Image 1 (tube, one colour):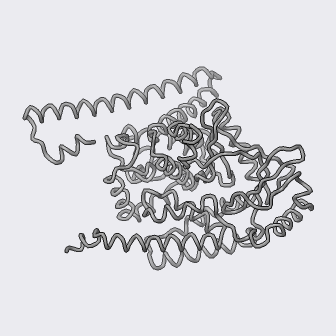
Image 2: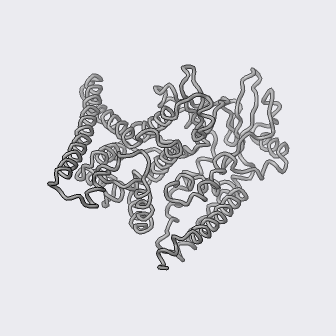
Image 3: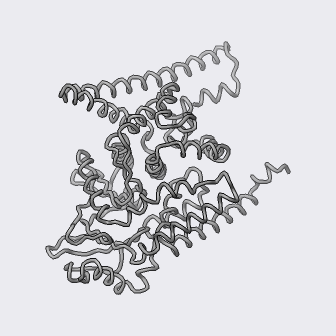
Length: 478
């Protein structure tokens, strides 16, 4: 048996599966035991469901809403009371009509309790783990040391610079007042999407370590069973999810950077259709207008496979290897005819992406280092939404939907310049419609051209004027 056949044998695959499972179990146990940043890292790994073995993805998903139970379970009443006395000089039962000490959910930084205000309003109270601030700097230093040790043993695996760049942003998550302001800004900027719900913050019972907000029922966005039991359309949910976050990425620039399934709930709205409840607004990133415009145009160029434009707009973001960056951005092989052939990755494409990540790891690190730093969390958002869409069965074309949002976003950004010059909002509106129309026409013509070419090739093969080869068969499949 050749070595190639050996690592594909059932026995080998079974042993590797068991090894992956042990490693995944150890990761989850370590994250739950240590909490905080370790849980956040585990949550981030969940979004790489197209690169990591399935054992990791299945196991790590427990971190999305049952992150940490060690702290308050030891003596929940005492620790919650102690924190409230420090922040409000009063225990919870003085501030609320009712307060349930048993948490209903756990996140990386806090646990959530049900409560009722004195006017009867049901609220969710997010209470930070009492020792979290004391441990934050120590956790950062520990992670820095671990990453430096890994980098020493595997020089190409250098992620310590990522932690250096992000630790300031992560520290902002410890301030729940900042999270409340982020939530209010998100609600304002997405208010034209009637299906987006951001729980209202109650400031009189909030502090830097306690956040009280409207209580919203709902199921996790990737809970297919619960979604179907409510009679909601999965396609509608996926489309709304992609559109809402694409609006942030391509237009507002104020981007939710942790939209994992535990932070996006689904409920039935008054119109009988799905509403999305966006939670946990602690981690946000702002992408400036120049970088947004470049990203908008790059996404459009990728969809239309305009190599010259791809190169130009990737360079505007500081990246020379535009082709590799495009594949990192899309998390899919950027090949004409395959990008929108199917909403789901084929086995061949999944294998390509895994090989690409292994064989071009150092190049990918170079691309990430070259990008504007805010783009790191933007990529996290894009990849997390991609992972959710995949879990839902990819019922919509994410690439095309985001491209339409990118075209609209860039048109509005460009139109704002005309508005400032001429004071003509009508001109801005016309420009948005015109650019969107041009994109739709270009894409439809590209698709039509591909189909006509395939039809002509099939006809020539049937008439015996063209030999049928394996390469030709693969072309016709795509």
